[in-house]
Length: 306
Ligand code: HEC
Ligand code: HEC
Image (cartoon, rainbow, N blue to C red; front, side, top):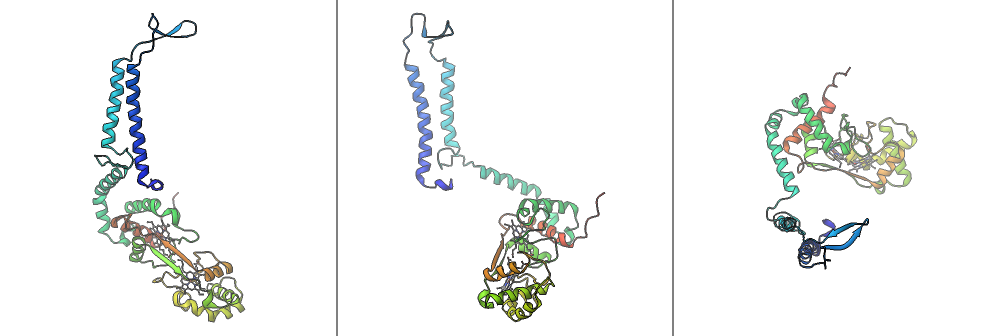
């Protein structure tokens, strides 16, 4: 209803519904009073297929009462349930309420199971197959749309299976990333670096940090310009988890590799956000998910299947 949030629409919908019901009653009343002039043999005079005639009998009473019954039912229904515009109905029933009641019931049923999980450390939980099966399902339902079903991420969405962390990879840091969400913000830096050529040089210096193919002369010229970046990425470009500044020396690229990708980021900056999950998932679910995500890069790989 968000497009039709003016009170007028609620009234218009309710009025249309009530006028419709009143029209049914009126139709019933008119037809019960009006008599079609019948010929002497009590037919309407319509003839089909040579000899098929239509009798002019009144509506059977059981049918009339059924009709009236449906009208009464509809009125009682509209008092009890939502149906007249935005009127909630006396029973205050809603699909959202029903959904929430079902979720609360499910949470209650699962509480003893989750209590066992929350009593254990994430490091321990990561080796527990039933807990990790639940963690995987939570991941598929809540995280895979951004991080991929294999958690390897994609451009702009970090890979959660490697040991390269933007915000830190301890179980506590991972749980915090999930609970509160994270924002990584790099401002446009071109003005602080200098000319277009300076920006290109600093890009080659960044490439040289991970031994990626680069122009070594440009890299040398760009080195001094990197001081503008060191506050966040560190003097040696190894990043800073407290700021979410990525390690630039490990050849793992969140936003794409190469001279042009780096120049674009320096010129335009980059902000990425991971949405906080605390309102969506319970603390216990986050505990299991945190163990699952931590385990993706810390668990020994499962034995190969045959
Ligand atoms: C709307 C997309 C989106 C969803 C949904 C999402 N994430 Fe993220 N997540 C991101 C982005 C983007 C980042 C990187 C933020 C940054 O650049 O600092 C991130 C970062 C993270 C990090 C920190 C990674 C690091 O290297 O420090 C963790 C852990 C994480 N997400 C786990 C999860 C889990 C678990 C879920 C499911 C409950 C989830 N995410 C759901 C987009 C998402
Ligand atoms: C204010 C802190 C800050 C400064 C200063 C800063 N950066 Fe960043 N940089 C970040 C953050 C935070 C990110 C991650 C953005 C995200 O999460 O999407 C980032 C991302 C990047 C990336 C993308 C890395 C990848 O894995 O794809 C490159 C390249 C980069 N910065 C280079 C630089 C260079 C070169 C400079 C200096 C000219 C610089 N940054 C200055 C905070 C900073």
